[in-house]
Length: 432
Image (tube, rainbow, N blue to C red):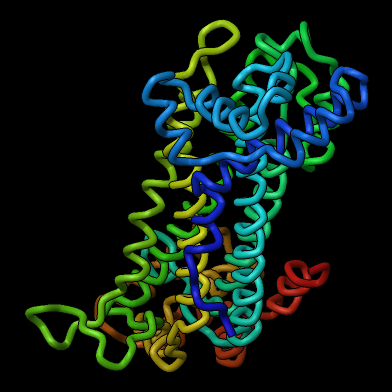
């Protein structure tokens, strides 16, 4: 049973409450580290931990004057703590809080996306084995090529999603990087042990070196991983759209009772979910481009990246959560038509066996050029005149001089194309 999609879990990560709570966690951890170093009295630390809090309305009110969100936050916290508030944020700069908290939030979001992706992998694997032996035509350039199985198509998607899973894990680690190193990253007024303590307790890795900020190539890697993941979903969704075309109709999105496809044409059953996913993937790729633009900043930092990340952080992760949930349910409920797959496979009167005939003639001593010419002329005639390719070959003297009737018949067997399906499945799923 696929869990019903809920935006609440991902949305909650990006609420002001969670953002400010993460800021407060960082500040308190920094105070703890400084107390351990003898820089903050134990009694003052206890008071800070007991009284520290924030009021979102008060932060908004203060920010109207300060025009600085971190200062407004710190003022609100200090108002609650009192005199010991002077120890909060000691030796730190705003980016210490902002970048470290952004890492925490992206890691929280990544955890959800990894779970989403693992759920999709379960569904794809189930579908791959369900349709492992369901024969269909493979296509190149949109034209009939040679037979495959629908299960192979699902296995291909599964393998690609495994790569996306690995990318997402790596990207999560790339952005799980914090910094508490002061104004330009030199630890001028803060001990490096504070950074180690804060990051360790937040599940982050301290940046080996930073300027005033954590370098944005890390974030570009994360949003690139999301863009690639979205593009895979786009690719798979496009395949479903192609298979659902009236002329093909080998698979289609589940059409629920009472659903309507068109305001004008009651017969329509459109691939709206797949089209929606293809459209959303365009947005995801644009977020990656925005993240690339954040890499080059002036000197030790400027804040041109800040406005971008306030949009793409929540938008990209919320959208990716939605896309993964929608696509997982789409695949799980996908309607497949094996009989139509066979009908389509037979539409070209057997010309899909042309390569096997070509190779058999070559085995008998023909040159590739001679064999190709003989097979092609019969294939073109079979296609154009809608005549059995096998019968044309049986009547072709050049072919019969090399191949007996029995040898020709042995060529025209679907299983000749599928003898390695088990091997492919073993390669894809054996270690999973």
